[in-house]
Length: 118
Image (cartoon, rainbow, N blue to C red):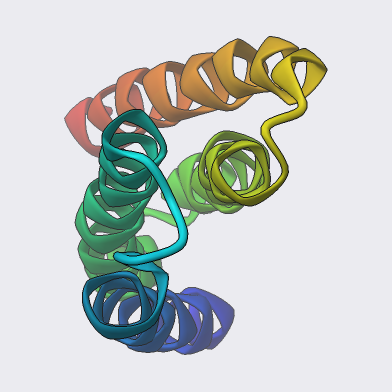
């Protein structure tokens, strides 16, 4: 589905931009733990942006794979978004959102495997 190619491209762009922002703009403003949290978000955003590109192609042949794409989009917003926000604000409650995004990632990967195996 074309939408996942678009989301994957946006996610890839954001991963590069936010990674560079941390390396050049945030390094002097965040402590080591916050920078590591930021980098974790960048890494997961990168991986799942690539996964969305693949799902965009796979879902043409396996339409049920589209559900995995939506799960990964939600995972990117919840997991990565909460980690980015936690890094900047230091609000620990944001960390409670992160596992929900992780569950979406896990469900997305499982759904993808199921969809292509049918």
